[in-house]
Length: 500
Image (cartoon, rainbow, N blue to C red; front, side, top):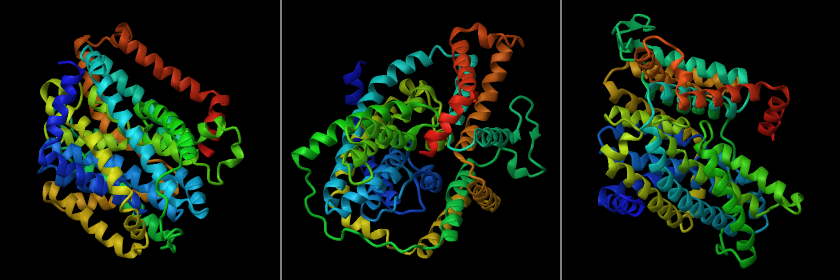
């Protein structure tokens, strides 16, 4: 099958009633959680994971994907109108977007965010479709040694790109690897690190950990911060259509943001958040008058909004083509697929072509739905931010508890979620980013399995990892990343970049 045959198959699968319904539900939920501060795609997907196990795999994956890239749209609405980013990726958008709203240009700012995101989503979908097959073909030549080296490179890159201290990021990865080791040994079947709990014989529940670290911990932080007053700056929106001079400034910035987000989204630990910050820095450097930024520059909205949407969508490439999750959202989706008996990676293209290409086609449909959803209903979305948080958080906690309980029908998972909620709050206080931990937890068992298989095939010879050219190249990249970030000059530049 060629490129057009694949796309045709994808649209045939995506234009079914079920696929369209779950794509719409995902986009709607994504916009909602993007608008509401205190929620996020990681927490929401964690809460919805139990519900997805009763769905068809294609419906579940399409809905979760819609939540992820839909949240990038929704977060910009309150960032522009209320100066309160609903999603972390919209922090940059608030800088110039809110200033545009104060100048009476809220409609143009919102239209800029929506149009730029649609441009990025359309291009990123084509990139995924174009690169998935070649990457999948390369992945088919991978053996256990190559997969182990690739996963090791992914973990090291996630540490390099994690915000904050390198030591803390390394500690989080190590903690995640330890959590992944809990359960029965693959070869002997003997329990390990289970502390006598029978419930841990099959390992620690990924959903309970994700809900605790990303959901409950965020609730505790928001309750501690109080329910700040949230008032709309622009109650009436007019002039949603940008003028010609706005388009001239917007489109090049959106294209640059799309290109940057497409590349950074593929990197482990990259995704939407890093893309939006990098795009804003790039637009500021390229501007003839950088002093305009922070005062209502339209490029400061178009570039980051395009970048975060492109980064969100291209982060699917490593998961779909190689079976390696590049960030915490992809790790959750990988977990959902594995539980349903589907191994993400190059085998999906041959074994589940309808699922694979249907997901890709649904991304374009989802971006079109988001464009229609966001602009006409922007007033409704903006008013949701005025809902008091003390009304929202009990509902969120009940939903989390029900979702975790239904996984195995036992209360142990609820206690586990509460425990990791407290652990997640400690991480927040210690300024530790939990994403590398969850990546380590997901990749750890896969790394161990491939390490053992590689050693068995080589009869215990560790040189197999450097004798195989692809594995050696991946290990060399991993070593280069460690050396580069350990260099004092580059380390200082990294810290300055994240601070900015």
